[in-house]
Structure formats: structure tokens, C-alpha cells
Length: 54
Length: 190
Image (cartoon, rainbow over all chains, first blue to last red; front, side, top):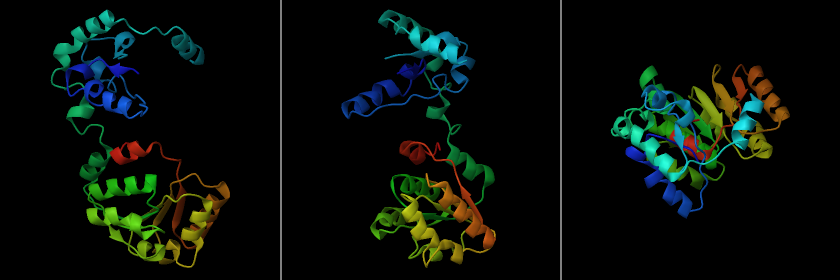
């Protein structure tokens, strides 16, 4: 599942929520992996590398 | 566009752990206070918040059908400080909303009296038939100008019938596109 490249560093969905969902066998639908446009606005990444797959 | 999407799907390779680390290293500084993840730090994507604060008005909303979808949508309307009246064929299902501040109507007709808009989110055509065309129908209780919105997948014939019944009483009947996931409803994203 793609998660935006900012997530890991602040109030992380990947760290806090995904393990609980996996444990309870709940599927996750990812949306807006570029944080709408804002992850790109940061200038740190391009669309080609704006999401990670944990 | 389709070809491009298919190519992307077929040529997809997961990043190596080292590549993920390198990528996260680039964003660590910018991401540390969440300022580019507005859904974590602001109300930017919170539709309920925007509507309530943008318009600043409280609507009188009736909600018929408190199943998986209806209960969550009605709950969001209560949370957004609207004046919400609910009705459910099994009255027990209305209790949690009553505890949060919704009023409970004894019949759809009573529910519709004095509301600006009536939403219905019932299980199927038979339930729609019962709440919309039975003896205590909301259309009978609604004043002219009330908007009636049917939210669920219903037979187009039932939808058309509701529209015609509403038009004959000079209420406005609408059938919406089906909403998405229950969680989205609960979070106000629908």
C-alpha cells in the first residue's frame, strides 16, 4: 500500500494505525498519496517518488 | 491513459528497504511537524467543519433509516451542530443518536414536520415503500419547499415514484448517487 513520504515522520499512520488494522484483518484503501498537492509543494520529492510501500 | 495505467501496474517493483530509507531521509526535515500533511494538522479536508463554519447556519435535518450508513451520517450532522430529528423502524437504533443530542420522531410524518431537508437511507425498496408511501409518510408532514433526498441504491422506478410524489406535493424529491464507505461517512469525507 502506498503511503505518502511524509507520514513516517509525524503522527504516523504506518506506525500507529496499520499494525492494528493488520492485526484485525482489516483492508486499507489508500487515498491522496501526495497529500493532495501538498507533499509535492514541499519540493522534497517528485511525483515519481512521492509514495513509499511499507 | 488506460495504456499508461496498465504499464505502470505491470512494471511496478517495490522499493528496496535502502531506497525507502533514502527517500524518507529526504523528507525527514520537511515532514517533522506535519505542515505538509494537512489532514493531520488542520481542518483543510474536513468537510463537516468547513460547511458548518463557512455557512454558519444550522439546518433542521430529518434522517430516516439509521443503519450502517444512516447512523454515521446522522451522527456527523449532530456533531456539526445541526438540529437533527431521526426516525428508524426499529426504535432502539435511534437511542445512541438521541444520547448525542438528536431528537427521535415517532413516525416519518412527525419527523418531516418543521425540517428543511429529509434524508432517507433505508435498506431496500420495500423499506423505502414503507417509510415514503405508508400511512405516516414524511411527504404528508413536510411543508412545501422541503427537500427529500433518498441516499441508497434503490430501483429507478422507486426513485421516480418518489420524485413524482414529491412534485405533486410541491416538495423536491431527489435520489443521490450512492455514498461510499461507512468509515468515510463517519469521518465526514463523503
